[in-house]
Length: 324
Image (cartoon, rainbow, N blue to C red; front, side, top):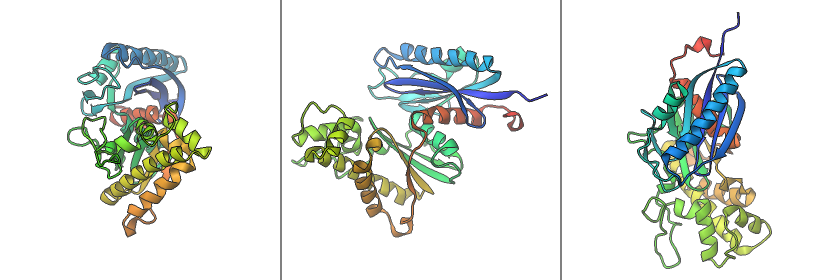
C-alpha cells in the first residue's frame, strides 16, 4: 500500500494579487490560482479572498488524491512568524495591522496554518526549489514596488526579535536626496532611505523630477524608454540600480552570505538595470567577497507560494518519512 501523498496549500497575499497553490513535500506545484486582492476594502475582504482560494484548492487536492496537512502564508507587512499575526503594515493593505492571519485561515481551512512576510516566503521558495537551492546561506533582495530582503541561515529565514528583519528598503542611502540636498520621503514615514530611490515607484518619481514625460507611469515604462535610448529614462533607471547595488554590497559585507539572489519586478528590466546594479554592488564588496555569486531569482510569481508551503512543511507535525 502506497503511503498518502501530503501537500500544503501555499498562499501569497500581496497588495495587488492574492495567489495560492497546491505544493507537495517534494516542492512540486500541482495547481495554482489567483484573484485580485481587495486591498482597500479592509482585512475581512482580504481574508475572504484568501479563504476562497484555499477552499477551492483544498477541494482540488483531495480530488487528486493528495492529503492537505497545513496552510502556509506569505503576506505583505511585518508578520510575526511565531503566531502568524500582522504586526504592522503600510497603506498597501488597508487596516491590515493586527490581523490574526494564520489563526483565521487555519480555522476556516480546518488545518494548522503558519505565516511569514512575503519576501521571507520568496526566499524560502528560491532556497528550496530555485536559484539558491542547496546553498548554506542566502541573502535575497526583492526590488519592486518596495525593496525587501531576507536572510536564510541553516534552512530557516531569520525574521528577527520583532519580526522586522529584512527591511532592506529602509537602509539609509546617499542616493536618496534631491538636487537641493533634501532627503527623499520614504514609505515608512522617514526619509533618505533606499526605497525612496530604488523601488519601482521611486524610479518613476525620479524620472519625472529629472524632466521626463509624466505619461511614463511605471518603472517598466521607464525601462522601455531607456532601452529605446531616452537619456532621462536611462539616468533614472541607472541611479535606482546603483543605489540598490551599493546597499546590497554593503549588506553582503555585514552578513557574508554564501550567495545573493535578486528578484522583484524592477530587476526584470534587463541589462540596463543589472549592469549598473552589479557594478555598484561589486565596488562595495570587501576583497574576500570578490567571488560572491549574485544571481537572479528563477521561480517568478510562484516563489512565495512555494516558500510559504515550505514554511508550513517545516513546522507542521507530520512525520518526515510519510511526506511523499
